[in-house]
Length: 268
Image (cartoon, rainbow, N blue to C red; front, side):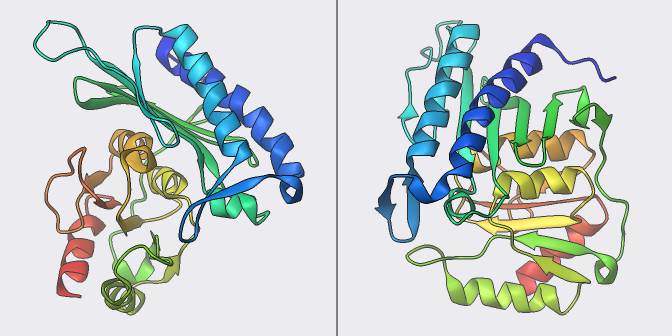
């Protein structure tokens, strides 16, 4: 059994507690009260309840850490230059809200820990399948208690690639369709499952060979980034440039397919 650090235990316990409530709400999804945040972008009562549970659990365990959360935004962090170590939880309480609200059992809780601008730990939990993906800097990536690695495939024509598609009011549809057409013509298959954190976790576990998407937020990708890297993969922007915290595009894959995907998407 893989030994989990105190930090990972805090994160997985918080995810598990929030997940219990999410699963109850998912069972009664038709009765949820839903408000609209924007075009085709929903936030549910379940989303807000899960975020509250995560804030309470993580805040109680580590009261000196700050937060960046999808629904409630950021809380104060230590001031740079004071000598204080800056640690921050980056949380998406319900990644895949649209799936959730339509009764599709593919969504996740994503928690990352940032220290002085670097992601040092991450958890992505799928409560329906009970898949707990976790990773910590220098300690590898795991699914429950099993070590995971990115896939070993080296040929695009044998690869299954995941992506995220633009939707109403978001993204550049013509650009995406050009990229999609190029990738479809060169690979064994495409998947669009609507939960970026799980897409990245699946790359880490070798279920997907690569993943790309544009216009994501830090809480969508933070935990998945360390999962992929600790599983031996590469994470950059779509054009191959280094991934930064403020990046809004992402490309993840293994060391052999990643350069091929960069070229394919650049040419598109």
